[in-house]
Image: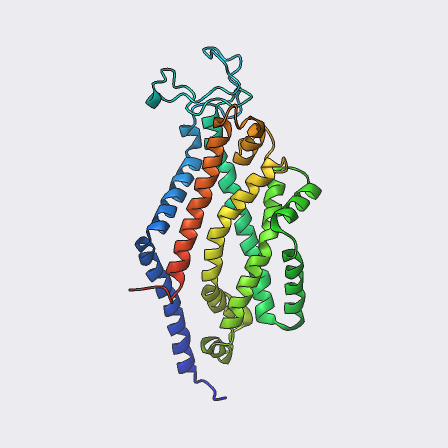
Length: 315
């Protein structure tokens, strides 16, 4: 094989870096061409604003029962929604009260914080751990690759939710332990994805050029391999946040996630699951919140996939 001259090597490296940055610039412009991605971005932005401004938006303390509060009259536990749009005069509780007499609107608003926290943190931890393992396996290869990927195969052999339930059962119920369990189940996805990207990148000419220039493995990985392998990981991570929120709601519904009186959508559903027909509003509003959140991340993730795929980009 012919040796690459230093000048030619540097040109190749610069060209590849420019292509990578141009892809991100073009993707940012193209994201607005996909209506579904724009809708998803709007939903996510609104949810983030609600989570940040929850104390300002919520009308009551989410864990305070209205039973015994001066001025509260009528049937309090399970009180139906009161909307001015339908002629309700006393619009104090927009979504009604739950079975403990707490304002459901405030609990759903504060539940946005819990759900987004679990979604973002669990996926971030899984991406960090999975990318590290995948890049190490793909770049080092050999026995290290075999050991890491066989462990990932073992984890993937278990259904994700069942594995998360097992982990939380061992660690104990709680939102933090549910977050850890969800993170562990997601790690193999990002490990396999990053490994595949590294294997397709590390033999390319600009990486060979870096070796020829005497660059250290750490510099090659952080300056060239990771930036060029991060695209599919970001797309998968965006889609994974919605799945993580859904898994967190499922764990809380089973009593393994958020514990009462903490406001969390799955926990609110769990408290009201036996009153679907007598008090449907208790399950309708948190259920709609989960659906809209997962839909928003899925729409935005699909748009990110389309815009970051060079084969699908159009000028």
